Image (spheres, rainbow, N blue to C red):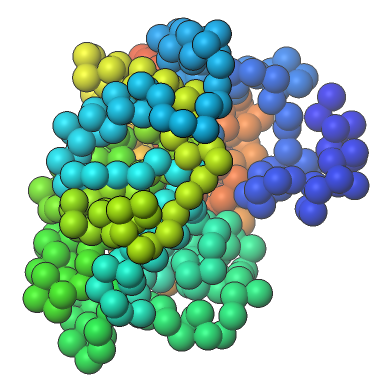
Length: 417
Ligand SMILES: Cc1ncc(COP(=O)(O)O)c(C=O)c1O
């Protein structure tokens, strides 16, 4: 049972968990035995409608047969060779077809690694040191991005992590999200290797880019010789088959992907213009290597997911479910609130009337949000246990699920006040 596992886990793992947001579920995290479609099943045998979806990767829902079969076929052949396999070529060709700005790419194992390589690459290519990021954007758990970071770093009050050397923090400039004049001012004063941005912010709740923000970044970067990095670890293949760059029509120099493109298996991808990517070892001097890079299971799962996305109305179904959830929330909540939604990613902020950057998100009533989380859990619905995460829908969130969730929401909002 979850309670017994939790008692042992506390003696084994710092804070009882292996990734901090998981500890936010009260009184302790429920342990999960499995998942199917839009549901997860707890150790206690309870079914929950899942709006967390592994924090984003499971765009087709849990355990989709087509992806499982592709992984099983790879498992039968073996799963690690230390030399190239066919699936990595297939996956890269599919990615490049749908995200043409990724002319060449490198497969790594997590979004964290992808942004780490992207920043090193930008520094190696431009010969410049400083990079610019945005307050509340989260790009993973390495030193150069754990500065004014969102997600669990903000949830636990350590947006700039202890242990990040002062010397590193001095190489990173930070602007408020959606503030082009800040970017213009900093980049015109001092050379920067790159601007890294979540094209839709998904790690401080959801915050959309203001009209002209992404194209404005593109212009400023081009005119100052700064590389523009879109961190599409969440938005890649979610907001459209071509990600946020397809949706907004703005091309970055470098893109990072993760989550959906590995079908729920560990993956990160860094890709971009040929002449930049060719700076990577072995063709150039910027080092990257990895025992598990282009892991055959992740490659096989990724190919299967993209094949599914190429043939179906999966984005339409996921987006319809997200819109129904949001509309129902708007109808049922009496409290002042904002719901930000882009496609199939969204979040509600209670007690505030506008959220366009991280400091506005920090003003939301996080206690009320956690009450909403707990009462939805009692009603059989799992949303992230943190204001600073996004809710996600999948192609498995069909009309029956939506109807159930709308009823659950009506009951749950009573506890919010
Ligand atoms: C936008 C973004 N970039 C990077 C990462 C880091 O990815 P990973 O957790 O796979 O290291 C995340 C994780 O949530 C993310 O949301």
